Image 1 (cartoon, rainbow, N blue to C red):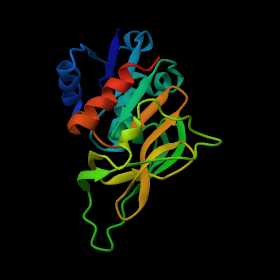
Image 2: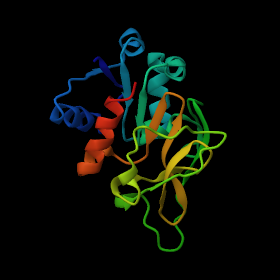
Image 3: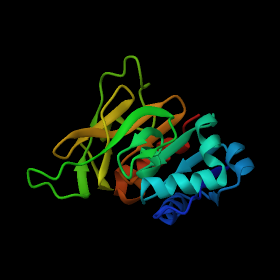
Image 4: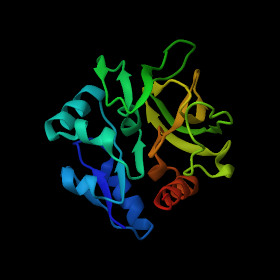
Amino acid sequence: MKIAIINYDAGNIRSVIFALERLGVEALLTSDIETITTADKVIFPGQGEASSAMRSLRERGLDKVIPHLKQPFLGVCVGMQLLCDYSEENDTPCLGVIPQRVRRFPSENGLKVPHVGWNTIQLSQNTEGGASPSSILSPHFDNDYFYFVHSYYVEKGIYTTATCDYGVEFAACLRKDNFHAAQFHPEKSSRAGEQLIKNFLEVV
């Protein structure tokens, strides 16, 4: 199985490579369009700032490629946010794969921003008109803990397959067709995160 990890100068990409290696899976970190389009699966991870990340994708021509990929695709953290239409972070148009908006967490009510640490997710029950039930989410993930690091969040919508609450209920996971996404870091989320990665590797 050929797995491509998209390289676009974002942070935290290496931790995804190490997580796959712990599972005995070798992946290629690449920005080569042919390698990405011919991969069996594509992972789009990262930490960073939306406008600079989009600029990096445009410089590589990946902004035109990613929305048209047909193989199983996993966006993580900023990789999830960039799949959306628009981010409030520096007023950034994104890839437009999933018609959702990315907003900054409110700082009132004593909430610390960024949202950092372990939090539970709740699996979404209603996927009518939008997301298909996500095969990367095991039933026992409901109310399980995952590790988050983010100042911006994706609004809950019809493509939301799991939610999390941090002063506001937001999309913890999304799915549209072959595009799966998680706001948390599965590679840092212990047993549950490892299982989510395994589930993605088994997606056909």
